[in-house]
Image (tube, rainbow, N blue to C red; front, side, top):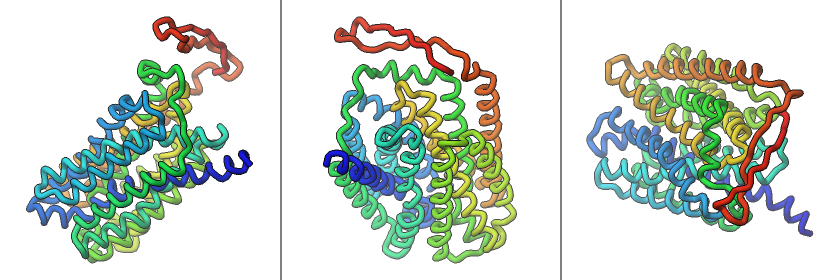
Amino acid sequence: MHTFWKVISMPLALLALAIGAFGIGTTEFVIMGLLPEVAADYGVTIPTAGLLVTGYALGVVLGAPLMTVLGTRIPRKRMLMVLMGLFVVGNVLSALAPSFGLMLTGRVVASLAHGAFFGIGSVVAAGLVAPQKKAGAIAMMFTGLTVANVVGVPFGTFLGQSAGWRATFLVVAGLGVLGLAGIARLVPEQPRPEGVRVRHELAAFRNAQVLLAMAMTVLGFGGVFAAITYITPMMTETAGFADSSVTWLLVLFGLGMVAGNLIGGRFADRRLMPLLYVSLGSLAVVLALFTLTAHNKIAAAVTLTLIGALGFATVPPLQKRVLDQASAAPTLASAVNIGAFNLGNALAAWLGGIVIAAGLGYTAPNWVGAALAGSALVLAIVSGVLERRAPTTGETVTAETVTETADPRRPERVTTTAPH
């Protein structure tokens, strides 16, 4: 009976994580479909309203390590619940904000939960399955984020355009409450691993491959956001779509994300680096082409779908690579890598706003995105070369690990020899 419940409860636990991811994904991306409405309500320009994207992303960058460190002494399930509570508070504040500054504050508050939730959630998800299925489990959790772009973001955009953008953020806050309840009911208790300290978590950042993976994350997904942040004015002003068409365009982008996430989860466990080479290289090409295809409705819709697919095909492999390379203490590294996604988002949104403000047009951010994705490909190639030059599987390297004894002031040092 215990074995039966264990088999049944694992998918339900992953579903609970996906529910939380759905709410977070909705609030992160829905603002892009509502930028004109928010800008008009507060009397600011579109590039200024784009700070709501940049501010959220920077909040994730800062919040990921901060909230993860604060949660090192808290069981992972309880920490996930705390993070979802913070997410609810931030979205309620955004919905009720009387000024643009307070709206931005609400976005930042909500964003503080983002990185740590996906970072801790990735570790929890990977721990629920066999080692060879880790990327698939992580992808299942991130499915909530991708489905948000198929269902949550288009619905939120439609609701915001018809009933006011504030209604959208109130609904998003309700999604956070649902996610909190799901985690409380379905996620199993996972006590904080014994012997793990903040200094152990920080040690992962001495690994060059971890840093390279995070840099790929910043540049690769930043390429996606360079185009997507300003997708509404690009599609309405350049492609000639009506405002009402933005909803189904976001559905297409979301469908691409779902497909890319599933493909990334499937192949990352088997062909991780080749998957990164193909997806990053293709993403750079498609983003460059978007400057041309954005002038044709059908071509623009197809390109938008491809951007979603290629961009999210990189998410499971990059997250898994960080977990693999920081396997001794993965929680902080995993959370910081989620922050890296959003650092790329902030950088891309800022650079996109600069080229638009310079009078280069709404398609100019696509060139920015192509350059960012191309740079990520270069780093991926460097990472692969360094890995091939490392000692072969037959060679061994000596690693000295530290395990906590009963007296934390006197750690026991254990020297192990393992294949590299």
